[in-house]
Length: 95
Image (tube, rainbow, N blue to C red; front, top):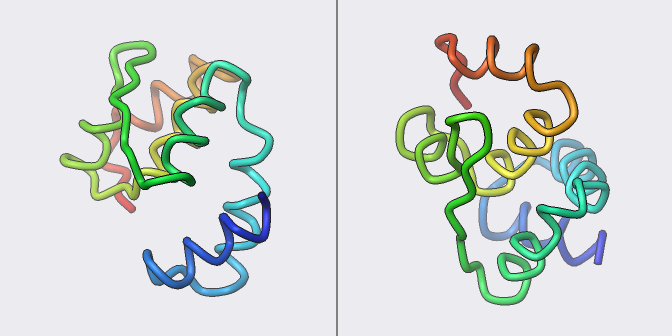
């Protein structure tokens, strides 16, 4: 699955090889709550709107320019380090 994710990130989202590799590693280690959304995205690029701590994947994509994989990683961060993640995601951070 790791290699497949890397390939998608490079070929479809124009990630450079290094960023694709590190992003794919982050994605395969997502919180179990987020795994079904990742599986759907890998299978057919389906994006599911997930909301955690008042942030949502689709809002991060629309408002901050995140790709869906980056939004999933942000959701993972919110689950693991909510106070730090909320503060940073509420700032002017953009992808």
